[in-house]
Image (cartoon, helix red, strand yellow):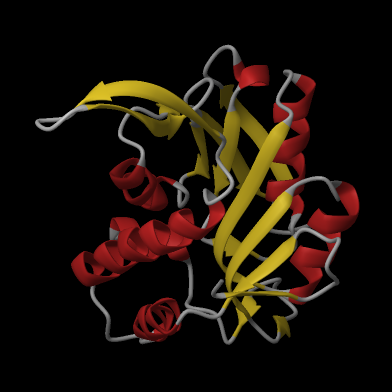
Length: 218
């Protein structure tokens, strides 16, 4: 498995170590990477991370008729996956996950960051139903202070969500600590653990504002 658990065998924080993920993240960081290439890289990284995050989906055997014979063969069991991007940057990762699971239902959570306090504020929440029966992937390319991720997962739990995984491409130690302490039951998948937050709560070395670079609004 191309992941490292940075806390311990019983904890839920997984840092990706796959060479392709690391290579593509390095390309994301480059200030000269344009909008189109940046967007494609976000999608490709989401595919690779989703493959790892979904390795524990339950299976059930069903009967299938092949050109040779009838056999019992495994399919994903239970309700379909729910994908919940945190707006707006999380939208960039959605197509990567739906490449793996095209039938997934998609919800949205809107958060904006106060420029003074750096704390998140909710402005939108729409989730697929029945959310309590689904495996939920919460998506956001950046985990900085951890406020948006923590509050988004709280919203999902308040609405009945139980099995939740969080995927981010870049994280600061401060964000992982806050999210893990608030929701120790949530599996956290991180593409790369960066050094720290600066005085403006931006990840260093980071890659800038992911939303601006995905949508070309910088």
